[in-house]
Amino acid sequence: MPDLRLDTVAIGTLADVSMTVRAGEVVCLSGASGSGKSRLLRAVADLEPHQGRVYLDNTEQASVPAHDWRRQVMMVPADSQWWFDEVGAHFPKGNQEPLPEALGFPPEVMHWTISRLSSGERQRLALWRALAGQPRVLLLDEPTANLDHDMSLAVENWLLSEIRKQEMPVLWVAHDQAQIQRVADRHLHIVDNHLEPAHGSD
Amino acid sequence: MEVIDLAWWKLGLAALLILVLAGVSLYARLGVTRNLLVAAARTGIQLALIGLVLEALFASAQLYWIALLSVVMLLVAGREVMARQKRRLHGFWAFGVGTGAMFVSSFAVTILALTVIIGPNPWYTPQYAIPLLGMMLGNTMTGVALSLDRLNDSVWSQRAVIENRLMLGQSWREAIEGIRMEAMRSGMMPSINAMAAAGIVSLPGMMTGQILAGSPPAVAVKYQILVMLLITVGTGFGTVMAVSWGSRRLFDDRERLRLDRLINTSQ
Image 1: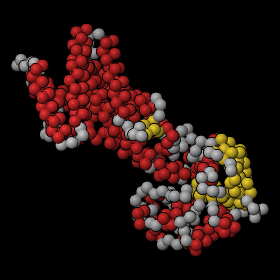
Image 2 (image 1 turned 90 degrees about the vertical axis):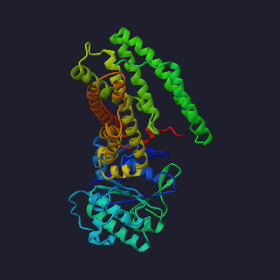
Image 3 (image 1 turned 90 degrees about the horizontal axis):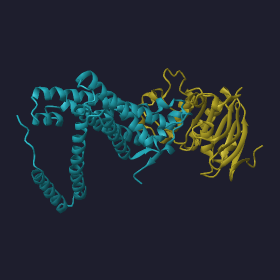
């Protein structure tokens, strides 16, 4: 089973981040805005120069081509981007994954034009787009920020079931305490320039 | 037909018209008066000087003098390409990418034309080599500058899209595919359009000059066709090379988008 391991990773103001995220485990990250949560995810996805090493199982980040690494260690940004006219064009060719019911889209969503999507719809579709690529690790940056409460719960449940089923290690940036309570196996908080276990978690 | 030489004072009459235009633009507050006068003065001075240089060069016809002038022309064109980009690569790269692309395409096409197509003896005869290279460089410069400016500007404004595509596991080539194509196209369009309009909308300058100098139009036209085809070839390959090299430099060896390698010159 794949473990995600960070070994003395440093990026921006964050220094000396070491941790292991086990298969199927959700580790929530929180911290003030600007504390470097997103940049840490970017370092794990190898989108920014950083120090330290990241391993998936025993494969080191730098030992595989960068695009192969990112296909396996998939980051979903807070603000998803769409560049073709139609939704379907953004998905891998021959995508066989059935549309998850929890997202609340009709089957013809693949032919919708991007311009008619709301920000919440974009966010849900971005999550599905990421999972359709069959990653081995998920890095989620506030995945439910643009969703109302009920939709948040539905998306959380769907994500958790996928995470358990595929046994993916997950880093999940969140700021809503109630959501962290619901989804986190562990909760780490950024204080100054390092991560510490947040109160109320194990 | 004898060529009618122009007396310097007659050029003064044309210059007087520029002064009239400057007066009008000053009156209408177009804000271009200064640029107009400086540019007109530069045209006069630069062309008078290059006339002296060419007189001397034609008299000596030595390969090393011709090579030296060619290199100077290339470096000036390289500087101009750099100056025309709003956002450009930092350090030597802004100059190197454009100049390298212009060197490979313009020099290769010019030398090919001289040795294989036109065939003066010796092949570097400056009456052929210098005007040909000048036209190649001038047009390639425009194409390369347009395409690099477009490339850097589009990458900057679409950085979030590019990074999202990288996050989905696309290679750097896939992630900027559309931008590269657009940049190459924008560099090639001016010379393609010029070919389409030649002879109908515009009488190209080189042909006009040759006819004024007494060449039969049938010969002048053949040279003009040759030059336009070569310009398009040189501009096209120069643009493709510049965009390929420039876009590679925007990513590092881990295929990360490195916007810290771009500087904004308009600030």
